[in-house]
Image 1: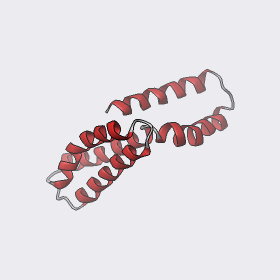
Image 2: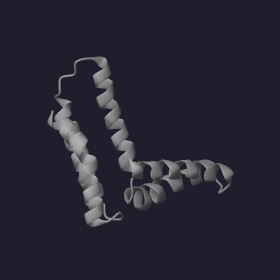
Image 3: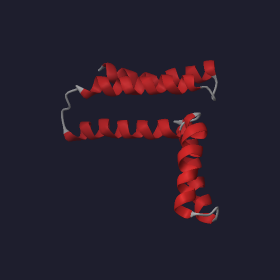
Image 4: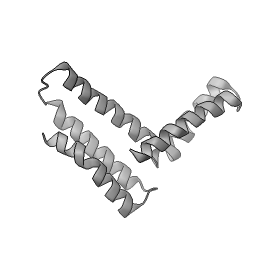
Amino acid sequence: MFGEMIYLLRPLVYMVALWVYGHNSYKSWVISLVLDLLRIVLQRDMKVRDVNEKNEVDGRNRTMVMKMIFRNPFYESIFKPKIVVPLLGKLLKSDGWPTKIIMSILEMRASVSLTI
């Protein structure tokens, strides 16, 4: 129950933190991460009534991880330059159109994560 309340209030807390600390501060990112991890810990012992409810909770957890990875400032300062760009450089060995398409898709995903 408390985990559900955190799930509902986290976007509001995150938006207030963005307003207070700014978009490029890690403080709002860390606050959101801590709230999501707290929610996961609290919901871990939650009794699920059926498979659909368990799938919903598992889906929330996967979505949370993806959103945290693609949310700035983590994406722009750590994930993209230290993981994505070197990995694409090794796999594709060029700066050609496949790399540009993949980077465009990731940038689109990052911009969607900022709005959710």
